[in-house]
Amino acid sequence: MPARDNRRPAYISRSSLQTLLDRLVSAGYACLGPTAKDGAIQYQPINNLNQLPRGLRNDQEPGHYRLRQADDERLFAWNHGPQVLKPLCFAPQEVVWQERQTESGMSVKQSMPATKPTAVIGVRACDLAALKIQDQHFMRKDSTDPHYQARRDQLLLIGVDCAESAQTCFCASTGDGPALDGGFDIGLAELADGFLIWTASARGTPWIEELDQQPATDDQLAEMLQATENAAAGQSRHLPNEKKLTQLYQRLGHSRWLDLSKRCLSCGNCTSVCPTCFCYSYEHHTAITGDSAEVVRSWDSCFSATHSEMGSFQVRSGIDQRYRQWATHKLAGWQEQFGRSGCVGCGRCISWCPVGIDLTEEVQVILNEGSRDV
Ligand code: SF4
Ligand code: SF4
Image (cartoon, rainbow, N blue to C red):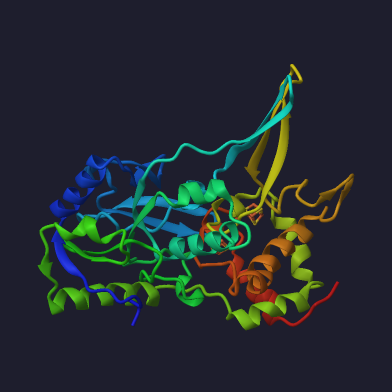
């Protein structure tokens, strides 16, 4: 059974979903929804369902992403584009501290972001699983990142079951989709002529209570379940189970890492589009007057040349070492840190790799061919 949350859905028409959007806008929410922009699905500010990608599908393959128009009215039949939820809480670049010289000495001030309630419509199961991992990293009991938390507290997440999978999706093998399974406030399953809707948190409940709802019929419930089963069955890629993934540590000398380094550009696209990657770096920007400075935090990538720099020494100077670091940390090391692998099977690193490197293929070769040490 792909729907693993305790959902009790009701049926609403498409116009009722517009009513929900109107209410959120009236209540002062910034509403982000999927739109077709620059040839890809991207979350943008919306206030009308007509801005959503009606009838759009996507074709995704290694190094390939294209939108395609289908002859129907579905608003959520696409799979994710390059955007992830990550920047909504973990900003790509932000000032975290400001320092100023005063007559009495140096004043240091934390720079907190301006936030407002933000509803995100159309979030997928894999991205919610990724957000949970980001929460684990940035909101630890012993040390919470205030910038992340300030934004995270403002999010209202409206999830949608995936009724189709892209060719690059493998969330069924990681256990993170295609059906919603927690981490959201309001759930939706799109039917041919409307939606099934259910609440999944106390925060989500008031928003759907007054919508014009009808009890879901048995046929509608069956359609909802069948859709996610079909999406799971349509996935041809997979990752091995987590126990097997820890064997990557026994393949550190595998010749495939060197083979990869001849193809990989070390561009870092895969880490930028990955919803779980959380590496960052700090820079001190001092004003030309010398009396003030800012500490700026920016996304970093284990593929960047400076990421492993210690003094004047690069710990991972070769691309083979960088790819190996990324894959072994994400798939094996995270299991010790977070109790699970860091891959939710979204497949973005495959679609958006300019040379079409497929993580699932690389991992299977490295794990299955035995150790071909170099
Ligand atoms: S695997 Fe692909 S996306 Fe990632 S750094 Fe290498 S070339 Fe870039
Ligand atoms: S490693 Fe690739 S498939 Fe896995 S979560 Fe990151 S982008 Fe998605």
